[in-house]
Length: 60
Image (cartoon, rainbow, N blue to C red; front, top):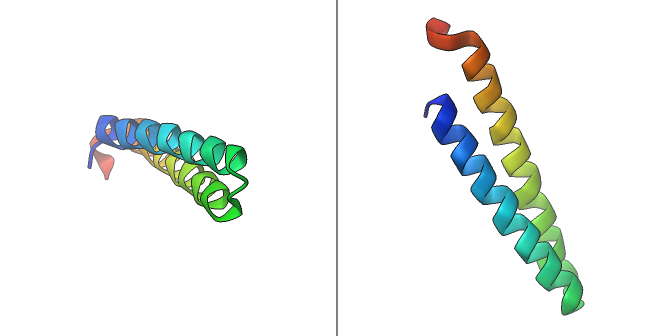
């Protein structure tokens, strides 16, 4: 995947994670809340990966 597709996937995971976390909090569902937090972390990792790809350009 390229830089832009990594960043798009990251945004999707961050949004979906936020929604899951909010629903988990609202319904007092600790499992769903934790799953949302994990998905947001995955999105953050993808965002960093995309930034590194952008900084390195075609060198990778």
